[in-house]
Length: 226
Image 1 (tube, rainbow, N blue to C red):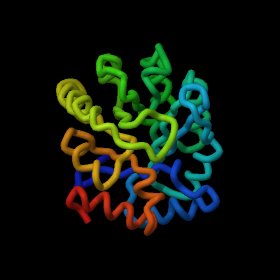
Image 2: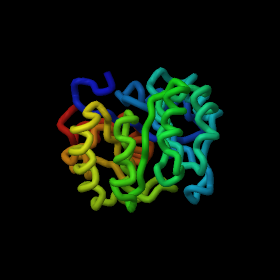
Image 3: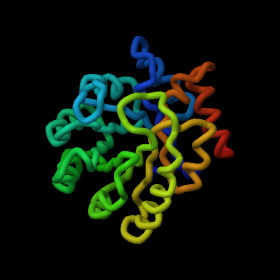
Image 4: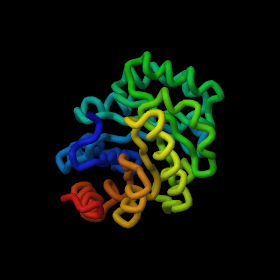
C-alpha cells in the first residue's frame, strides 16, 4: 500500500538538505517518520537550475530503505529513465510540458520497474494531463514555479488539485496526488483539504531551525497527527 492509515505521506526533499552530511540528514528524517525521500533533478534547461544526477540517487539508496521519489525536471526525460531506475529510484515523475510523447515516456518508466508519475507546472492546465490518467500512479501538482527551493506557496493551484482529484475518481481512483512547493505547517492543511495526499517539503523539514524531526512533527501536527 502507498498510503498508511494516517491517509497522507510526507516526502522530504533533499534539495534543501545539507549535502555535506546528506546520509545523516536522510537518516534523521527517516527516524522521524518520513514516508518517502524526494529527489529534485534539474538540468539547467527545462528549469533555470542544475542539481543532481543518478550518482546522488545511488547514494540515497545506500542511505535509506524508504521509497525514492525522483522528480525529473529535465528536457527530453527519456534519456534519464534507465540511469535513474538503475540507481535505485522507486518512482519517476516527468513533466507533461517537457515531452510531447508523454505516454511513451510513462510506458518506459514502468518497463524500467518504477512507478510512473506526471507533473504539471502552476500555469499548465489540467487538460494537458487528462489523457494519461489511466497510465499513471501519481500526479504531481507544482505549487511554485520549479527551479529553486524556498519559494512561496501559490494558493491558486488548489482548485486544480480539486479538479484532478474529482476526475481521477472516475478513471483512476488509486492514483495519488502529490503537491510540491512552499509546503509548510501553514499551507499543508489547505493542500490536504483540496485532495493532495503526498506532500513534498524541503525547507520546512531540512531547513527547520530545530532540525528535520521538528519539521516533520510540525507538518504532521498541522494535519492533526503526531
